[in-house]
Every structure is written in C-alpha cells, then in structure tokens.
Image 1 (cartoon, rainbow, N blue to C red):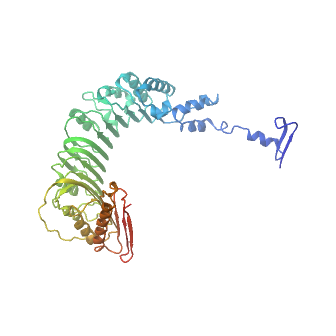
Image 2: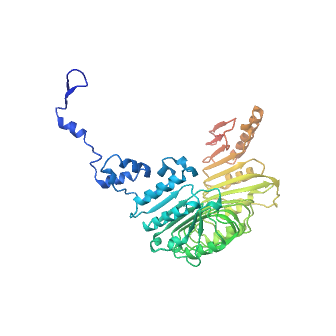
Image 3: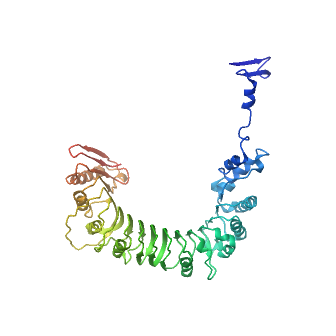
Length: 486
C-alpha cells in the first residue's frame, strides 16, 4: 500500500511511506555497486577501454585507487584516443604521451600481452623501444607491434638486442607488421623461446630466413607474409611446427616438418617439395604461376601426407596429374584454375580416382581467351562411392563442363547435391530478348542434366549475381528441385 502526504504543492513533501516501511527507501538509495569488493570492481573495469577505465575512476574517490585486473594492454586509437578514426599522424604526439603515461601506471604489473597498433614511424623509436623494454620487465608472453606506414624507409626498426635480457625469454609469441627487424649475428636464443612468430611486411633476406630456421626449433606457428624483395630458397625443417602460412616469392620450398597439420601458401613458387609431413591435414595453395612440380605435388602428398583431408589448390593452368601408386585420403577438394578454350576438363578425373574418400568437390573455372587443345584421351566410368556434394563455378558451356557434370551425376553413387553456378551477363542489359535467351540456355542445361539425375539428388542452378530473369521449377516426377537464379 502506498500513501503520500503533502501540504501546499508537490515540492513540499513531508512524508513518504512505501509499504509502511521507511527502511525500504533507505535500502533503495544504497549504492549497491560500490558495495562490491575491490577485486570485482577492478575486474569490471578491465572490460572497458583504457580511456573509459581512467574516466570511470574519477566518479569516486574509492574507485580512483582500484587495481585494474586486465592481463592485456592494447594501445590503439580507440583504446587511447576514444576514436578509431584518429589513427593519423596528427595524433601521433598525443598517442605517444598517453601510452607513456599508461605504461608508467602499469609499471610493476605482470601482463600476458602487450599490443600497440598505431601509425607510428621510426622517429618515435626511442619511445617504442622503452615500451618494448617495459613489456619485457612485465614478462609479457605476447608482443604485438603494428605500425602501418606507406613509406618503408620510415618504418620502425626493431633490434633484437632488446630481447637479450633474461626476462625476454618469457616471450612466447611475437607479431610484427610494417616494421623492420634486425638480427644480431649468431644470436638466436630469443627465437628458440618463441612458439608463434608472425611477420607481415617485415623485410627479410636469405640470411635472416636461415637464422629463423636455425633458431626457431620450438615454433608451432609461423607466418611470413610479404617479407622478401628477392627470391628465397628455403628448407623449412622445424620439428614442432603445426601451422605454416607463407605469402612470398620462392625459388624453392621443401618441407620437413613432422608435426605440420595446416599449410597455406600464396605467391609464386618455382619448386615445391613435401618431404616429411605425415600429420598434414589441410593444404591451401594459391600460386600465381604454374610451378614445375605441380603434378609431382599430388604424388608427394599421396606418399608423404597420408592423413591429408582438405586440399585447396589454385594454379594458372590445370595439368594432367600423373597416376600415383598411393591414394589420397582427401575428403574435400577445392580446385580453382584458369582453363583455356579447348582444354579437356576430364583431366581432373584422374585426381578424383586417386581420392576414393572424397566427399566434397568444388571446381571453380576462370575463362581465358587463348586456346590450348588437349590431346584426345579416352576416359572410362569410375564409381565415386563417397562423393556427396559437387559445385561447379564458372559454368559457360564453352568447355566440356556439361560432359563433366553428367559424368559426375552418373558415377557419384552417394551424390546428394550438385550446384551449377552459371556466368550470366544479362543483368547488365536492358534488352529483354537477351535475358530471355540466357534464361532459355540455363533451362536447356538444367533439362539436359536432369536426364542423368537420381531421385535422391538436388540440383541447384544459379548465377553469381541475381539474374534479371529468375525461374524456379518444382519437378515432382524427378523428386528433385531445380533453382534458376538466386
């Protein structure tokens, strides 16, 4: 029951009773947040940005001296300046002074990670060196420096001399982007402590890569992206490496990593050799040019990567893989390739035949205006017992995609779904006759493929962009659905 007694007007309230208890009002006015223990309040502050955390402490004299229980110091435009769009040279001086102040506050704390992401140059090297030294004193395990700069000559130069102190051996992860790293001759002790090394746009020479290979025996993850201005030849022999990402130009790469599980390589490679990768499960190759060992790679994988389950391969020219004595254990194959007019797409069937456990096939074709006539080869039907999903992207009817699609519909015993992505230009035209022509072509292709379909298979026929004429059919007598357009 609520009662309100007043005299005159509402501004002169004399007495307030809530449920006949004045004590309830007192409990409602209590600051429950300030009643929390210091440890919980400090933990809550750690979820705020550094800037907001400092401002929040000004709300109360008690909060001003609370400890911040964050284990990661992340300095970027949003955390320091309150606006992620302020990552510009105009704010460099302010950013540097604020970081100096914050690190002075956190002096003496043990942190797990120190991350500094801002547009800084080598003219701030004295401050950055002090920040790295502060991270070493705080025994951080993860050091992440990212200083975007359009001019390579202005980039911050990090000397590994900073890592020669005793506490630097706490480093387990080093991430550098848009920096320059200098190596002391013959000193690789700090590299041997690293488990993760990521270098992006960090210039390296042949001697530097040899230093990394000889010192990084405990690395489990290695990323080298756009680090070389000249061709590099390397034998990567790291016994504990599990994850490798390369994006550079190599004259030769040979892998001898017995614990490697995942490989991603982009760029140009003249020679690629798998020697000792028994645990390799995932391979993603995006190579700009056809390298000499392309067909040899399939044989290498069959012999040296018996547990390989996913292969994603981009080559400029699809070549005929030579038959291998060993079968691949692939479950997913993604093949992205340039195919000239006149090329026989049935060459991939030899790779399919060498992968009896394959479940998913994604074939992406890119049109090329030159002609390369393949030699005539007779291909016999071969059942694919585990293939469940097929996607052919770039379908134009210029090559023999139709024959390949029909082959897969006939021989993929367990096929559940086939997706045909047909390139279509009718959306850029206004003439309705052109759109009708594209639609009729697609309908003709779908009707032809239906002849070889099983009742348990779904055929999806679509375009990479919404077509101006989209049709959908429910073909009940086949027990499947065919979609035209998205």
